[in-house]
Image (cartoon, rainbow, N blue to C red; front, side, top):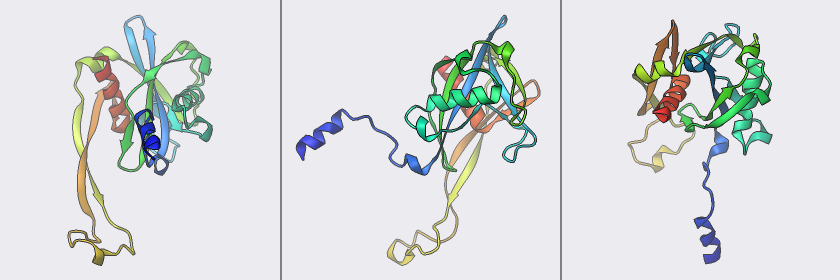
Length: 204
């Protein structure tokens, strides 16, 4: 048994309950222009059922064969949404992972679009794309608010076996920050702003 325990010293830890989350990967695309480095954003199609018209980065669900390499999902989704070949996207590196209270595990990456002039966005998903200078976000602080999170135990939980502090009603547990910013009339918030803010902090 001691020999088995010794292997803990060399193992790479993982998220224990990872399979309970919706796993997705996102690419924060950057392009080089004469004025400097720019970040590329998507405006989601107004015909989509989820978050129509919102600002986002390309990304989506991690397929089974991509489970051990989420960056492959980020590149695939960016290629599909932006209409550019994967070989024209250069992966720069990972940003910090995000676990959201609704149950999503997000793997963000930064990548460089090598041929931005060849972009042909998928109109079923992308209404339009626009870019904003990295310098703008370095010099303009993000706004911040909070979202409250509450929990409630499901039917059948044996409340008579635990402390009376636990009830069958909703109870506020914690609050998490919601960041936002604006550029050129576009309001950027939520997970997109959080990924963007992390990227800017790493740049600084």
